Image (cartoon, rainbow, N blue to C red; front, side):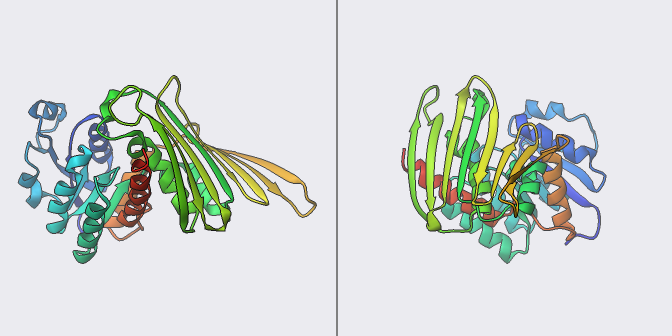
Length: 304
């Protein structure tokens, strides 16, 4: 818990790192002190002379209480470990780490040093997802489609770790059952890693989740449909819309549609992280949830 205004640094000023920087800069509850990027030219983006700009993350250790790490996945463990060892709070972009062992070590380190470790699973901050989790119980069948147009910036990982992991995280938060079997199919189309994948997860109590993810589609689509014996829910992540059909006492289905104002999910995620650092909130996407999602994702990628 931090009593004074929290001092924040951003590690990595690539495409997503710039958004982290902007959110912190506009947040009055933090003091954005530092930015780090190995490519010096990326630091020209920073227009404030009060902010420390450096290409070495170790240089800012005395100037921060918390950091956002927005770097390639293969650097996550080393950088997060450094800051957690120095008792700094960490918001770590997804996927959490390259290996489950690394994720477990980070969680142990965060717990030992009483640090916040939060993972960047943005969809948990979508208002439609928040509403769903408030009202829905006992899913029986889940169908997910996450389709995106090709973007060369995130091709250091396959489509499961790039896109599907968001849906894995949500499914695991909805289904509190043991995984019995995972069936996998996928193809490399444009990159050297799997670009399109379909996954069937069978849980105990005969609960099924069927997930499809593609990063080579002609349009963007992010939808989830959830079925139970008495209700049906449909989420449109892009439009922040939740549709529900619930069977009433007269055995008739009542339809409700919730249309939410499109939220700034990254802003909400960072607010949750900051408030958790202050002891005012609980992380919605902590390291344990990140590790659990990574475990499932790694089981999937082994099947390709």
